[in-house]
Length: 185
Image 1: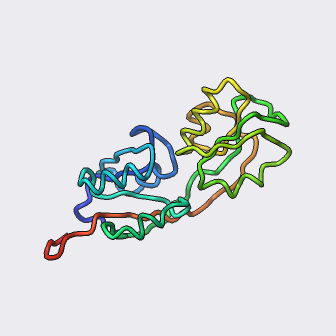
Image 2 (image 1 turned 180 degrees about the vertical axis):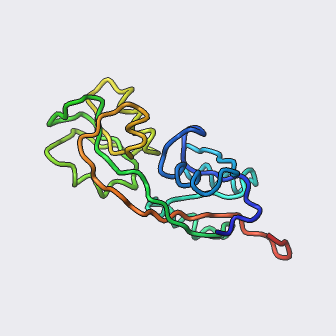
């Protein structure tokens, strides 16, 4: 792993104790890293551009990762894999209902929506993270459900009604800022 000179890493999360797939993946790299959580990967990219962090980590499933790969100011420093927690269908009620008002999910999980069995919803809303999906379910007065990871579901006390994917060995991309000519990394 090419982590030389990387002390601070930005990724998706609400706080240092968050359990988004990205936070868990970065925590698996080293206990010595300082992890800086951002509510969106784009905010981490802005911080990397401003030299506030040394690197950012983005999962390969993030639908907009190409904008970071194609950014002339960034370089892919390394890629590693991490087995993410199961991706699950949840609600705040112990018993699943046949119809919900809103389904919340991160865009990376859009492909899993059609795998949810026996349930319908009036609308679907993409949110910035698995954590935000859980919080929306808890804070919304309507009957809501979400696709999230099992670690987030457990942290927020949501009930898992269906495991949609288990054991995904997700690639994670480490981005650093491209060094100016003549500057050693």
